[in-house]
Length: 217
Image (cartoon, rainbow, N blue to C red; front, side, top):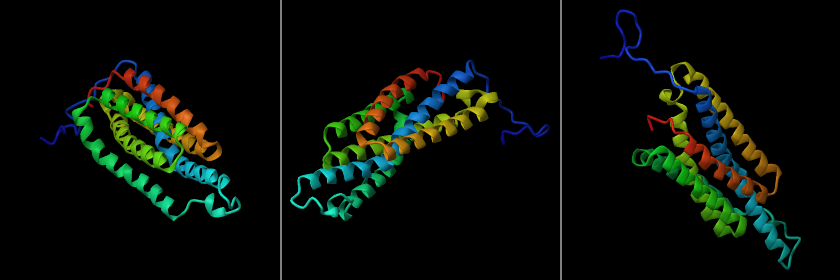
């Protein structure tokens, strides 16, 4: 009942090997790269957009030299906290949704919602639009990240011989995606980061739909 062969000390079960493990790993790496790009990019994107909004107020103000208009004030810090807390909601919701909706359908729909949220702030740059859109995007990111985390640790997806390699590659490539998202948000105008995120989100839908080998999600 312990699942261990008492005589040889070996598991009674074995993870079957799969066809095209390298292709599977590549697709999963792409999915995690884009996913962490989406999520980590918002860490610096939101403050940048708030400062940009304040700068537009400065240009139309009677006191253009008022430095308080280009800095994030106390109330706006609460917006950043609010968006950050939204990720907790996504974690809770993301625990239940995968049990109700298939992996590819859920992840693709949520990714399209993320793309729509970033598309909104390309057009509307006021505080309300930024807050609502990025809050929804943060919730969605947390849901998709749970999906990717389960995929990352799914031995049936990689096969026994490739599980450790595949899981490690996905984590490493995902980290690169997060760094790229933060870097673009830090060193480029917010509009650049939002457009790139929308484009990658569309690519992500294709990547997710190509992951037809998922069995345990």
